[in-house]
Amino acid sequence: MSTLVQAGALPSRTAAVTDSARARWGRRFQHGGWFVAPFFVLYGLFVIVPVVRGLYLSFTDANISGEHTAFVGLDNYREALKDDLVRNSLWHSVQFTLYVVPVIVVTALLMALIAHHTVHFRWLWRLCFFAPFLLPSAVVGNLWWWLFQPTNGMVNHVLGWDTPWLTQKSTAMLAIVVATLWWTVGFSFLLYLAALQNIPRHLYEAAELDGADSLRRLLHITVPNLRNITGLVLALQVLASLQVFDQAVVMYQFGPGPEESTRTFVQYTLEQGFTSYRVGYASAISLILFLIIAAVALGRMWLLRDREEAATR
Image (cartoon, rainbow, N blue to C red; front, side, top):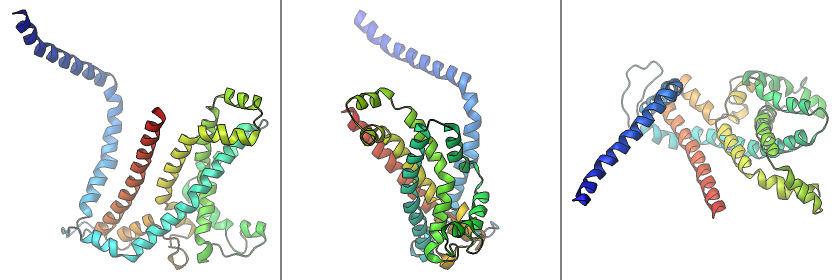
């Protein structure tokens, strides 16, 4: 009899626990939910809704006026796969990424090491390294447009050259890479600097007592402890570089550069949407870039998860 009573009491206890959990989550939402609700509302309006709208438009022949829109299925995607300009602009974005990302990672690390180990005027080093990142993209583009001028530009004046950086195909992409490096390396520098300050000091002291020189301490202590932050910097820089647009457009006065050598994927997408007025086709192209970026982000998460699992074994 007692067993039956106890067995019958189990569902009621489970229900009580469930009700208690619901009440607890309800109280948590009442205390903190309203603080995050504005974020979710804005995120839904400016991220979720545009993505869903763009997905719908990618299956239509919509123009910029929004009139006479017809459903065309996968025609936009088929055209994008056959479009040579899509492949060329995607290659320009990938090429820019391959140039920029390794240089930024190495340069940011060196800058962080300098700022971290400098004794005098440490604040000045940090300010000089990070200050360019605060400039708007339009300012950076116009500044480097003037610096790369062949006759009165400072770059040719300092190097003693007369290279037409912005009008020559072989140097057009390099000019954007140099401008981007100067502009964005400060963010990665700040991440590395914060990570360097979190490395325990006793590791260096123990290595120094064992006779390890500066190079060995760098290779066997600093670099391994910066592995996670290096992965983060790589992922952020790859995602940002694939979306390069501002500096490339401003430096070439809203054109594609010599022989269309600097037209990036984002730039071609905007040309289709706001110059050719093909909003449906531009939406399909932008979703292709979205899938590429999502694949990179998911690959980064997968590698990080495997590394964490290997470390815990």
